[in-house]
Amino acid sequence: QKHVISISDFTRAELELVIDTAVMLKTHPRPELLKHNVVASCFFEASTRTRLSFETAVHRLGGSVIGFSDSGSTSLAKKGETLADSVKIISSYSDAFVMRHPQEGAARLAAEFSSVPVINAGDGSNQHPTQTLLDLFTIYETQGTLQGLTVAFVGDLKYGRTVHSLTQALSLFGCKFYFIAPQALAMPDYLCDELTEKGINFEFRDSMEEVMDELDILYMTRVQKERFDDTEYMHVASKYVLTPEVLDNAKDSLKVLHPLPRIDEITAEVDDTPYAYYFEQAENGVYARQALLALVLNESL
Ligand code: CP
Image 1: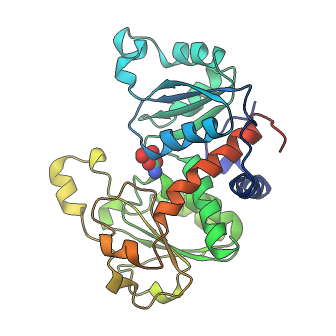
Image 2: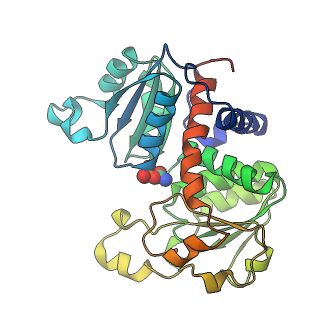
């Protein structure tokens, strides 16, 4: 059973296989690849990109989708059903079970009760492995390699599950990291300890400008309002805002990525610069998720 719970479950070779498969599916669409498959898409927490790109991925491969995007309307919420029971039932109707949940560890719990592969589409502030797959695919697409890149992560590095997953993955490719965040939203100690143990080169900086000329990828993130009360949020919001001026010393090949949605951390003027690549990144979610589904469901290309 190939569950996809954490990006740390992937080897470097497995990540490369997903990327190669995504490249293939982007250039050579396979409209019947999943024609015998039903994929459950169950979102217990809000999503736009992840849910819709997963569902588009399935539809464009000829498969069918069941599920919900509003768990408040399910019997789990209305009748007090346990997550374990829901997972047993839904997995009996489907060939793969895509799930987002506000609780950290919910996807791993679901995997214990599912009869089909569980794909974690985000669990609290823990992991977002499929976002990482599309991020890796996008970085590869723009830089031609994942090896030895210099990447700055900016914004909410404490609660930002996309950052947690992506640093773990890029650490398999000898990348160097800069972490730029308000003090209260610094990278968690346990992840820094992991990077240190692996011998990864990372540094903390106060501004984007001081490292801009070194960067291959600038990975911006949103401060996640939903994880704070209003007073705490006011203290950490809007500290790092990317404008075209901040990009003055950037390499020509730099690309700005963001998992989206954004609030105010990237101004609209940046969208018109050659550095902006976050909308293409969101589109790549379809191909990365197609690749993952094809591999998890053992469909040969
Ligand atoms: N990037 C991302 O996970 O977006 P959604 O919350 O819209 O799925």
